[in-house]
Image 1 (cartoon, each protein chain N blue to C red):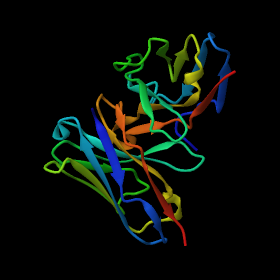
Image 2: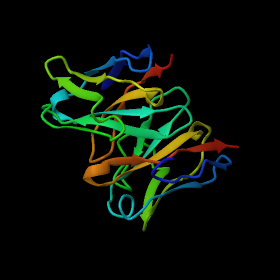
Image 3: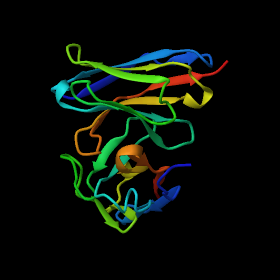
Image 4: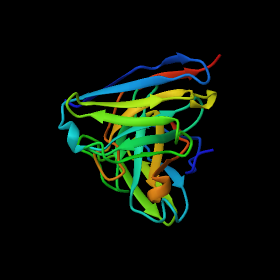
Length: 118
Length: 111
């Protein structure tokens, strides 16, 4: 059974940092692109970042470019999102997502809440 | 404001059919056959229902179907059941710069 389990969310002050982790199981982790997608209160889903199977390619939404870094450790079946210089508008539930199809995301974690507030 | 436009709400009675629209532009929905639909129940993770406009992942009932015409994609739920009540989001590939964009979501109510 495919499972994606996020951790690392919480309350942080503006300008602070958090590192999200997503532990994957039940599939050949290195064979899939992985993404982070966020869902802010009252708003739609937004793609944040993606990484290819071997970690050699990464990309970011303009809103987080230069502040967030995605990485993966295929030996640990884990993908990470390092979030620096956090802003109030980064407040959202962050989902770890597997790209099982071309631009179709077939497995999602339960999400971890990030709240940026003083 | 989301890149793709969905109606905020839709409703239907059990057994009826409901169609949810998702309108974009020629740079996303109209330009590629990579529209997906997700179902999200409160407090749960989104679930992929449709990918590549019309394809259903294994396990998704054939009551769910997708289509596209021009810059508008649609999700049709036939034979509505109580468990179909949820939020539905569309997404589309939008080119190498914007990658994937989502709609704002539609709350489907089963009356």
